[in-house]
Image (cartoon, helix red, strand yellow):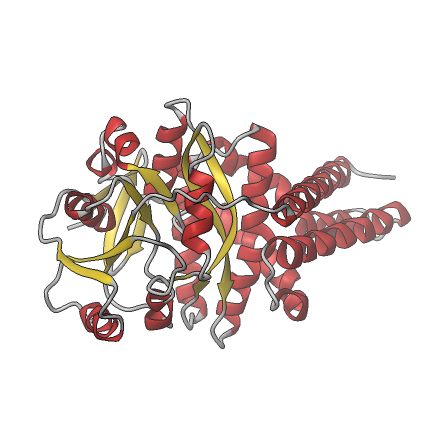
Length: 383
């Protein structure tokens, strides 16, 4: 006879299998939308690309270089550094020598406007920007040559106030790096598409790309208004959306190069992500309990002592999770590493439960070598 615990686990397995179906449907719709032709605007505005830097990232030169070869009529790239001895400066100077005809400016961002150093630099870069349209992305993001043209065309659509992008992780050689890449492609990006489906519109942005107009940024208080927030990308999307403007998910997908994590470094990074999501979207974070398809299926099988019905539910859950992973990885993100890394999926999904549970506790995070406490989404430095 089934126990109450096995029935609860079975219900959670069924619900999380339904979540897989939701992500599969959202992924297929997004993939189909991306196959439609995009009429490129002939009157594209000049753009200021803002890139705050602190230290170096894996494959940094190639990632920054991809912004220098855009098929776009007029744009400038502003790199911001707060430390005159930052090693990233040498990478920028190399790009300036490599592309003498491109407007590449190195901007000192010496002022400390708040706890989030990245946003503090963005506020100072915005003051130096020549153009009225801004594009922000992280220093480890690599893009295709038509990236800027695509994003700016989408920003010109009626009612759009901000354009953001999905991204795929390019893993390093370590297993921890491969597990994080797999999680990005087969779970995190699925959560973004599911949230957009449930809420009808995207209510947040992703740091992989944020394109918006100076006018709209100033109307929400500028970067200065979010300089103490950890989840600055979430805040930008939420505040732009609060002004009755749409957050558009671009058809273009970018890449981020992941570090050579060991497992302690991987877990620390995952914990920071978890706490960021918890303080930004607490209801959504609680709802992640319905996304642990494989762990719930395994628990159901164990609690039912291998009952026939539990095996049937287990097989269905495993199939749906695998299909979800392949649709998101191959169809949506065009991530060629997903298929050969599927054997790591059970390990990754079990670790996700541990990280999620741990994310409910504690307020401390380590970010870019500094320790902070989170208080209602804001950062406070730990002295």
